[in-house]
Image (cartoon, rainbow, N blue to C red; front, side):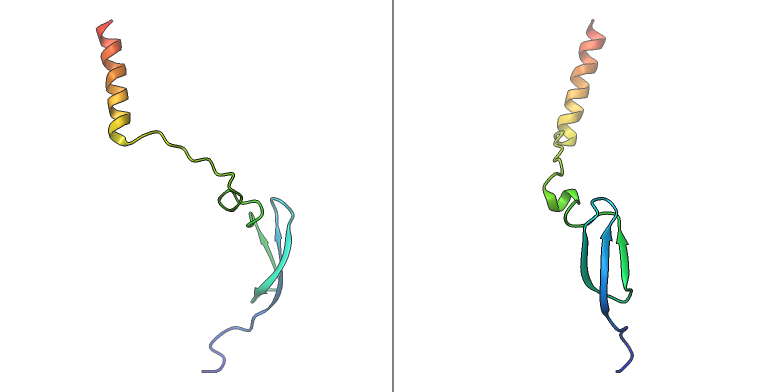
Length: 72
């Protein structure tokens, strides 16, 4: 079926965070993105893994704190 898909052209992609410019194919000739693979935390490994424990562990900590404050 001809004409069902748009024509892909070379596109320049510019990242507003780090300023990286690269070329890809798109239906538009120029794209501006907020973050790219050069600066996004998931790709760079800068993402911090926050481990606060399970829900049960957090509940137990809160309960222990409230028991200490009510006993005083």
